[in-house]
Length: 238
Image (cartoon, rainbow, N blue to C red; front, top):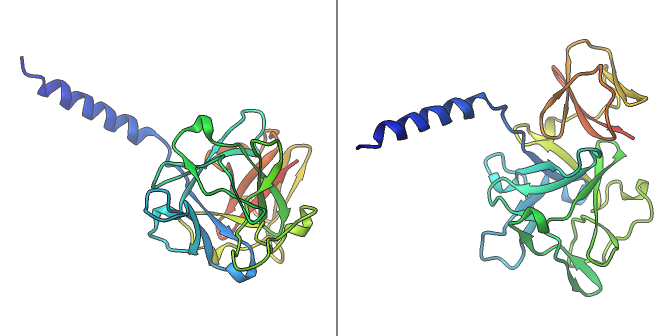
């Protein structure tokens, strides 16, 4: 008995299922440090290099610069796993101590060994990424220049425009076209877990997974994206 018809049927069914799914949104994690302008985190875990992650110039066609932010807690939208689109590996928990500095030099293929990263809005479209390491110490993702002394931060506000500050950009968009909220006609605010948009009725609200959210719903704390015809804003629900 030939099995070709069954294979063809399964392929057709799979095609229908895949077509019905929403398109996944990937992001670039751009450095907000002025000296690293236009640079983002790039995965090198499947190369022969010594480091799994480097800060490289933005390239629209480079899938190693695209990241999937996967919710890590159904009740807390500020916690995410960070997985690379190309390698399918996560920014790992293993740290290496060199010259009294910790480096996230290792990636991991397993979700179970991946840390949960807390995304914290610090203003001006900037965020920090932090996690608790195997020693119980909270550490931040940092774009480091190994030729210089390590940076230190003592508050979220102090992280702005340093190697600890990042911008989360939709991978399909040119980072240079993303505008901040300052000076724009559309104003976005929050009240009691709701996102309020003034200046336009033509907008959508989504989470970092790209899933649309009703503006009428009260939202758990986390980072959300408000998109209008010409602008995109990141909004923090505390």
